[in-house]
Image 1: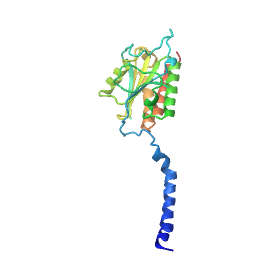
Image 2 (image 1 turned 60 degrees about the vertical axis):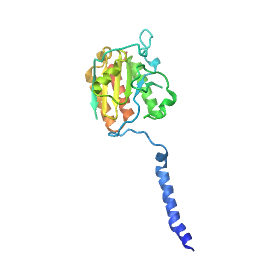
Image 3 (image 1 turned 135 degrees about the horizontal axis):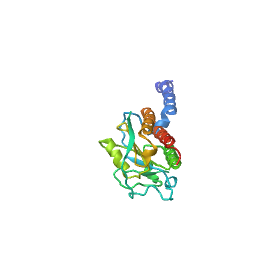
Image 4 (image 1 turned 45 degrees about the vertical axis):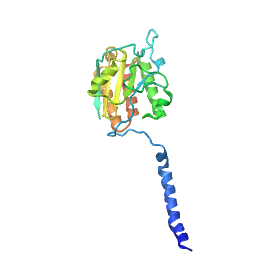
Length: 83
Length: 139
């Protein structure tokens, strides 16, 4: 056996197995970064504002409650929290 | 899918699917579906308009949340969450505060805090929506 062959068998094959196991374990999360929130980390996303589907919110008169820019009101109460 | 205002400065509320605008957002498709379901169910059950704002709140945060709320209606409830600042505000209006006293809002905020502290943003928002809808009762 030449030196190259020895290296291939005793170093190359173990390394190959290690890389294969690493890919099996972490491959999925390397390709697809989960955009999970972790407390204390900066939030770099654009602000988003979610409103219910208009069909879900119907006045007694059948009129939609949210009319874009048509209404205005004042805040009365509520609560707040920090974590 | 819920309507969404992607830019905070924009005055009008957008409704309906936003298509590819959601691709690079902070939430996965299944999370958005949960959020949408919770919003639609709680709003449909109670007759109040629940809306959820996720993003930075400029200082003072309470004033910013109330300014956002003023674009809504009397029967609206705004849940404003700022993950970066670790702040959450619930704002009620003249109509909704009769059915949701501050005590009920504080309880919901407490439950939301617990989820947020664990890093579960959508879970916290969904919990808050459920608790607020339960407190407000049917229409």
